Length: 297
Image 1 (cartoon, helix red, strand yellow):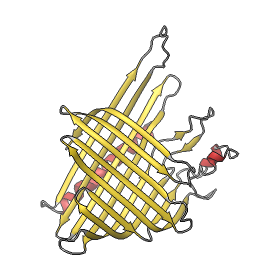
Image 2 (cartoon, rainbow, N blue to C red):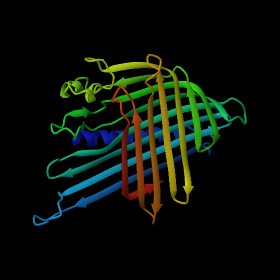
Image 3 (cartoon, helix red, strand yellow):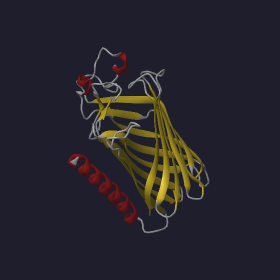
Image 4 (cartoon, rainbow, N blue to C red):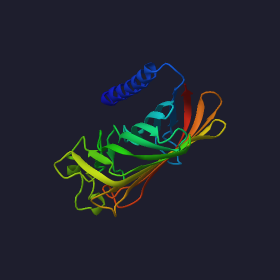
């Protein structure tokens, strides 16, 4: 827990420092920044005589998002940091992970013309997690993910279409992605006779900690808009078609609907959908509903 606390503090401090330095660099209205912090908490307690079934539990979820965007003339630079971590603790398990996501995206774009909706862009993207993950369907509860296991770094150059401020679509031929394993021995904890786990090391060759891939084409779509008063809907879709295996296109969708009420409270609905044959040849879906505290600045 101390390690996770240190990592959280470091990430939050780094993100805020980065955004602050960016804004200090240019003292004008070309910079726009917004941040939000959320905390969700729930608890359940059952007496020893309770006949309805149940187990004492407490769950906690935290998220922190910050975004800074610079726009001037034909130039546009966007930096977006998102962090989510949720856990459930009960009598049998001290820590059951419910959500875990670290996302950072930095993109520079330049319009092809003064009023053009098309831009040339260069982009750096990072996606990972911090806490260990287990397979709770297996009574042995083997580890199937871990600290920065996996982590994805993607570098891309291409063309972006941005018809509206809240929507963009990026085309990047020749994008490069690194899949990194903080624990390259993760597969040793898996029953290799079970076909469901045959890609438990996320496509990285055994004994190695990194895999490099070049895409024939990467497609990324972003949507972020207040669809009603105090209601924000955002989603990001990514498709990565590796040159080595065009039949196995990696797909990922992250969506979040946040409704704010009163002054500091919100309801948050989240969805993650993944189809990546380097992990498992099935659709993966994670869904969450949270209620709690929200602070924006």
